[in-house]
Length: 446
Ligand code: XUL
Ligand code: CO
Image 1 (spheres, rainbow, N blue to C red):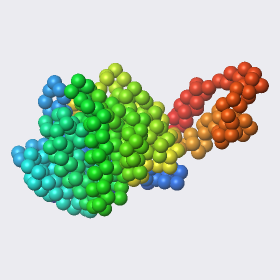
Image 2 (cartoon, helix red, strand yellow):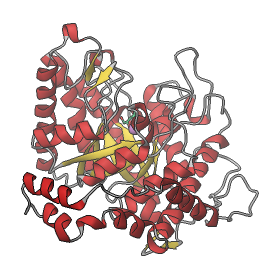
Image 3 (spheres, rainbow, N blue to C red):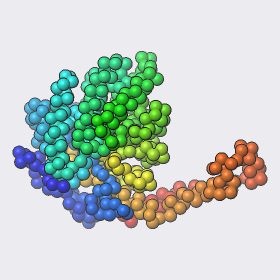
Image 4 (spheres, protein in one colour):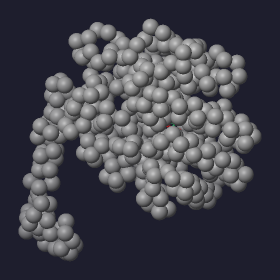
C-alpha cells in the first residue's frame, strides 16, 4: 500500500506509516498485536480481519452532540464550499487509510459528496467524487468494503425513506440508493448496505405497520434487481438496529431481519451487517446477534464498535473489550470467515478527543483488540478442548434413541415410553465457569 498525498497538503504531519512493534512497545502510534502479514491458521491477519475505516465518523463528524457543536477542527474541515470540503476530505481520508494500513473503507453517498435537493445536482456531485475515489483507490490499493445511501439525515426522510407514507419520498429515496449502488459497483465494493434508521415508527396511532413493511420489501427487491442489472455481484446487507433515531425500527435485531428476508424471498441476495452496539441496544450480546445471523448462513459483515454499559444509546465507541471481540471472532472463524464482508469500525473518537492523532489511536486500539481476539479464538478452536466439550454436551443425540429423534424416526408417544423406561434424568452440570475459565486462560496466553 502506497502512502497517499496529493502534494497539496499533508493532513497528518509528523505521523508516518503505523508500524507493528509488538506488546513490549511503548509507542502509542504502533500496533501491539495487529501484524498484517502474520499468519493465523491458513490466512494472514489482514485476510482474516479485513478492517475498514468508516468515512462518516472519522472524516465527517466534528464531535457534535445534541447539546453542543463541533469540537474537532482539522485541516480538511476548513474549506468554504461543500465541494471543496469533499475534495479536501477525500485526500485526508486516503492519507489516513494508507498511514494506518487499513485495507478498506466504507461510505454513505453524502459522506463522500455534497448532498443536494436537485436530483441531477446530487447525482453529478456523487459522480465527481466517485471519480476522485477511483483514482485514489488505484494509486494506493485501498479498496471499498461497502457503500450505502444516507436515508436518514435529510428532513424529507423524517417519516421514513422506503417506508414513508408518501410515495414521492419513497421514489426520492430510490434516487440515492440507485446512485449509491452505481458508486459501489464503480468502486468495486463487495457489499451494499441498507441501514434503516428512519424505517420504523414513532406512533402506531398514525402508522400502518404491515403496509410500510410490504413497501420496504418491494423497495429492497427493486434495488436488488437494479443492482444485478448493472453488474453488482456482491452481497446486499441489512444492518439491524432496534431504535434510535426512531422509537421502533423494523430491522429490530438479527432474528427479526432473518425472518423478514425469508418471508419476502430476499434471503438469496441479502445478508446481515451486524453491529455490536445495535445488538446490545436490542438487549443481546454482540456474539448473540452474530450467531443468529451465522446460523442462517446470513452473516455478511460486521460493524465493530461497542456501547457503554451505563448508557442506553448508541455510543459507537471503538472496541476495546477483548471478551466481546473473542466472542465475535469465534463466530466468524467457525463460519469460515467474513469475505466479501469485513470488520468496519463504525465507531467515533470521543467528542473530547480533539487531537488529530486521536483518530489513529482510536483505530489502533480497535485493530489490536480484534487482532488479539483473532489469535485467542483461533487457539481456542485449534488447540483447546472447547469444541469437544460443546459436542459432548449433545452426545445423547449422536446415536441410539436420541439419534432416532434427530432423524425423525420417533413418534411423540415414543418419547413418553422412552422417558418412562429411562427414569429421572441424571442432572448434568452446564460447567459455564469451566468454559469461561478456559477462554480467559487463552486470553492470558495471547
Ligand atoms: C447508525 C449506523 C450507520 C450504518 C450505515 O447507527 O450504524 O452508520 O452503519 O448507515
Ligand atoms: Co453501523
